[in-house]
Image (cartoon, rainbow, N blue to C red; front, top):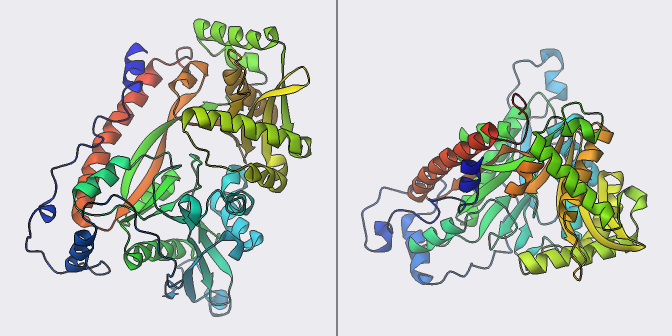
Length: 480
């Protein structure tokens, strides 16, 4: 375990920032083959580089973009009943860009999201309610560097058959898949990294599909169409790249075949092995880990703290106001600026109902800390934590974020607790490493090759750390 801890406490990757020297384009002219279809010419790219050679500042994202991404013909699936094919099958798919999720009805968006995951794997962060709360509260909007550019695919009758949460970004904040060194390398190369397209749930390192499609016989064709439209949008907008982060593993594999680079990361998740109570879980732990957890939990009552788990209508406006204060305390101390507004929490809470689980700690009648979770089909997703800015309570963070979530998952018979990004301290509390997936498409082919070398080396390191942690984890022998 010591070896694993040593690796985990190092910088995220020894390869960060270690790219080859500046490309010859940055220092001298060199003959180039003709432009790649769909890509801007080298002459045009060189002109842009010359104009903005020494500035790292992002170009202002363009407001006027042709919202249509073309029309695509569908072919009849092999499994289709030919007797009904001509009458029932759509013949064309038209993807387009919308500037706000409000331009798509909640029913249409959520139907795509639910079909993409299935009810058993329902992901609340992909819902219209969550994503619209980010926009309506001015958390994920142009002014914060998250310009909505969602993709909507319709058939010729106007039926929505697919949607993609997409943003035109002028920075890399709030993504949790770190590419700042890529931006620096682009600058050394004499080019601009920003703006870029980001396909994700803003500020949310939660795995799930990103290309959300209705279930149908021609679903695979719609996937190919949407991916092609995304790649064409990158070229059409003259941005550097598109990044699909925290995608599902299946989507990750399929996008590799479409020319996307594959990158993996690591998170820590708790797994429910059919436990009936918290003590059942503890009995799977090594004796020293079990003892430590019990000691941490005893500190809560010793500090006269009361823990409560609130859902839906149990969460009042006062709870959200207090939680926003706690959240600001965390962001002020850790990041320096908050991503989310006070209005987001109120808005999201009213839209998401019982999907919201707010863990609160009370000292007497006063709220002193809280942890925000969302409940999916088989998973509790831990997201944000904060406490009173003028108080410190030992072990309260572990209780509110990890142990209460475990108890809730056992009570609700859910399979998994996802506790968010990073945090090697989660390992000792029963949260084990799992891979996360992201896909990257860079318009410049030569720079893409350098990034590909980087992600391959990085993946080797991530897999090594995961293996070391699993081999020396907190559970008894034979339990993973």
